[in-house]
Amino acid sequence: MFLKTSLVSMLVLSTSGFAYAAGFEILAPHRAVYDVKLEKAEERSGIVSMSGRIVYEVKGNECDGLATRFRFVTNVDTGSDTFLTDQQTSTHESADGKEFSFLTKSFVNEIADQVVQGSAVRQGGKLDVSLASPKEQELAFDDAIFVSSHLIAVIEKAKQGEILVSHDVFDGSGAADKVVSSASIIGKARQIDGKLEGEEQPVPDRLDGKTAWPVTVSYFDKDIDQASESLPIYEASFLLYGNGVTRKLTMRYPDYSLNASLKTIEFFESKPCELEN
Image (cartoon, rainbow, N blue to C red; front, side, top):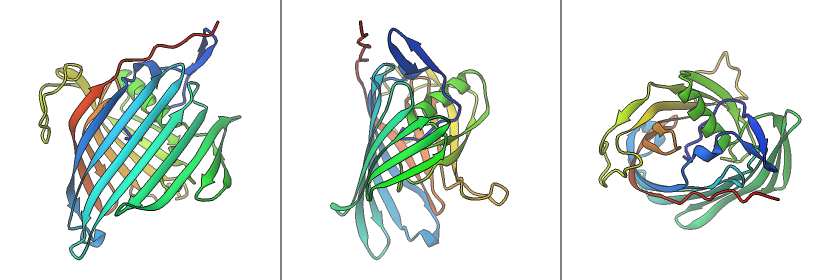
């Protein structure tokens, strides 16, 4: 989802006047809503309780590229205070996986807190990032793949029976000023029947009885020496379907973790490519 998943170099194909990232066509355009609850929190986190909602939407195809919208709203109780956080992110990845644009707006108690906006281009084995906000800035990194290619990579490797895959990823999150290293552990695919714990609505036919892989993706700070690195900066575990839909999500941060259960999902009609003459 919004769920930052990916790991292998992208295979780029060209046909009928279009260059596209192999596999984009397998992702089902959809909007999924998840209910979020606190799983556990260390005392140092300062969190007594936390709940919220995630809305994740993906649209596009292998010719136009993929656009995603992600909104994460939480109510946080520290014991002495309560506050509402609201993060809204929009991204677009080009069909060839070489260009990426992003915009994130963050609010606290409905007051604007931060805006991060920019774009990134992969070329010549390098990644160039141009930030427009919070300040204009040009950054350069070694090559990394973007989020939609990352998701496709995990699905393709899962189909091939791979268990552990890794890659460098740029997703425009945080201050959008770094590339992170990722490592994904992919479990054996299994058939998922009916509702899972925390789910209330009937499971749609496009998911019920279908197979999914249990996946855990860990992200590490590339600036830290691998030899001294012990814990990921962020980790997500979930059930991943071959069409890109995720269920039973757990998000782990250094001081707390959250569970997210699928509440509703709406599938959109796939938009066919409009081929050039």
